[in-house]
Image (cartoon, rainbow, N blue to C red; front, side, top):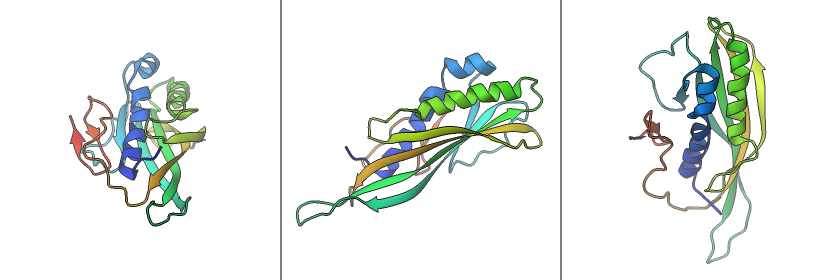
Length: 176
């Protein structure tokens, strides 16, 4: 199965959001922590007393993986990294412990999974980072891969990531 770049990004974001926007995170910290999405400017800084996450995606390689004749198109395999940065307020006495548990939720969003558009994930891991002024930090890193057919036109419409808060897509649009 193949997909397009824009659909792959939407599906990666949806895979994370479906796990994050659940009772799992509410059980850990009492609410669903805010998520900052790549390419979406926020009007304010995150609340220094709240847990929050930032999701970013980096394509690393787009290698040609098949030859094409006169009637067929070339296949490319795209691979890259998903980063979920988790910020845990130092003002919370259990921030480090809760951060570990939130990291597990983010890791498990990708570990051993693939999307309906055939984006699959591997080598998912949690990295502990040095703290910042206000936050303890964790990184969840997942490698991803999907196949794309050369010059395949993007499908029209969007794949919704979540109904609340607004969903952001690779082209910067929103879906409510």
